[in-house]
Image (cartoon, rainbow, N blue to C red; front, side):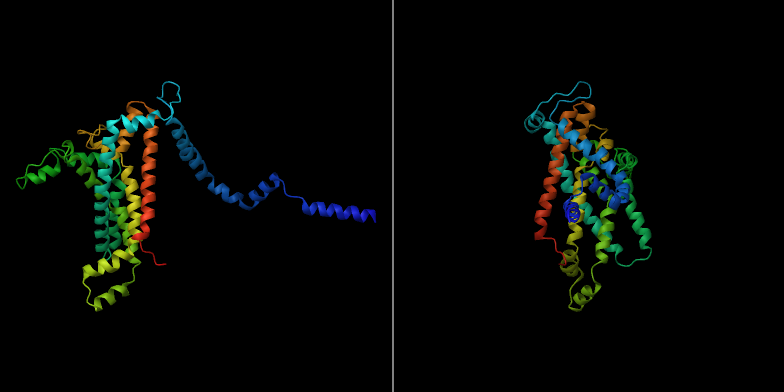
Length: 318
């Protein structure tokens, strides 16, 4: 009888026993080990090349690190100086916002126009699509920026063409009134990526809606305004957010065309270029880290604002 009771107690204790941490880890590894092994390259890249440097940058933004001497904690001094005693910061913000406001709408409008033309069922669509997408692959490269500088130089190809019509063009990249516009044109030229996304969105709009509108006598413009544009708003929203973030991050064209100076008269001083000058020109890594986090904050605020306002103009099927 006593042996039966001992056996019952032992069984009950075993049923109530909880698995140890080591047992839980072994169970997780057995079930998901292969998946984590496939994720390992991404995890190493994320923690080693993204999250780790981001945390280090946030710490350095509160120091006076300059690559030579050991860093000292300065609190919010870098942020205070940016807000109160840095005229180049204000100039960089002005140029960057102007570039974003000009380049993003022009690029999206041009991309949508080309996508509508390609969506009309022309022959050789895949060839045209590849050709138009090519600038997006090359546009951010150093070679294209150098080519752009040669095109818009005082004795460049653009002025040579204008001279054929008796027009004397200015030196576009060395004149403060035109230099930023050359970068805007270069950005618009890279319309391939949003164009492909617009084209995919246009293909999802049912054709019977256009047929019904045509039977009711709606003009092409009215069909575009009442059918195409509302049904395409999710795609427009996606492209606007992505392209705006890319515009805030633009660096290579301004660096190459201005020779890394942001000139003439700071007219091409993008925020990222000013950040680069502080970090690798003046070796103020702590100050540059503070500038980087302000840019992250600006992009985050813009993205949050875009999502908050999207409910008023973006239309989804559900």
